[in-house]
Image (tube, rainbow, N blue to C red; front, side, top):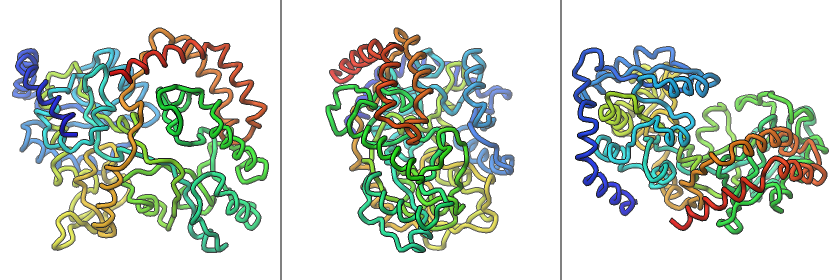
Length: 483
């Protein structure tokens, strides 16, 4: 980590004079009255008490940076489309939750933060795991300030504990899909009208793989095999075995019969399910966050390795627009959000004294009050540095030590930071996406027999131009590994 950041520091010293000259008017432009408030676009739903939260926050932001922040929310379903229009039109904004991070960075839509982040957000930058920096480099430059949170993730099978207790079921030895079959069978026999394995449309069978362009495509790296080669995941023997297990479970009735087409929700807090698949990271503190959200005890068993990947590194990125006249101030504000505990906790937990209060004698521990309610605070995962968030007293010092230990020990994906340039194979990728859309849900939910269906998938992929894309991707990946 220190060596990596030293490289940035040296480059910052060399380049900074030029950067300051090029952006000379940026920090000074905030002196104009109409430019003292920065505009940020954020994904999600606006808190009901947004004005109250931001009145408190902006006092702290203005005190440290001389500017205020105006956050405009765009809903989950509209964000990608609206940000695409904002970026392509060259609209003047300052900060945004990143959408289409790599392509837009390559187009020049975002400011280069390689030197700005260590200078204007040093405290926050220094707390970032190296994986966040490597995973966000585009052509060797940093264009995002990531939220320091779940830098690694792993897949888990989560069990509704009340059913484990009711039927006296043990999950001690479960480390794979196959291991869960015995308890699934027993539960289904005793409670056939409850979803034994609660999955639906969009579900993906998981394993120890990473994906250069996401798991909607067949291209993968086998983390238990030759990690220098990109493969077709659907040709991998271990993955095929998992697909066969899903099909067996589907035939046995453990998986809902309409899983391939269903958008049925199985709420965490409901009792309509026995097992679900979840993603967990270090700041989930085991099953603590899941159980809190469910309002009942849930227990999980991991079946993939903890992995620092590009997807995790880019999970919650904030970018500064290249159209912004306040680039340095924008980075300063991001630095404050990610390094000032009073500021961040007031946003994520809500208003102190109404939603929470500090526990006497424990500066970093809090107790939630009756005023802590949904939609009266910001989300932790896409707001700021989770490491400086206060924790409830249920999070012990040992749990925090374990959190930091697992972060240090998690494996790093061999493709961390690899960005596939798609310009020469856009048509083929579009064709491949269409093919995958026909097969993904049926195969992953176990609805169709993989031994009959995967050969058809492979044939369709071949006709769509799979070999051309694989050759180009492997060529670029070889060059990435050489560097």
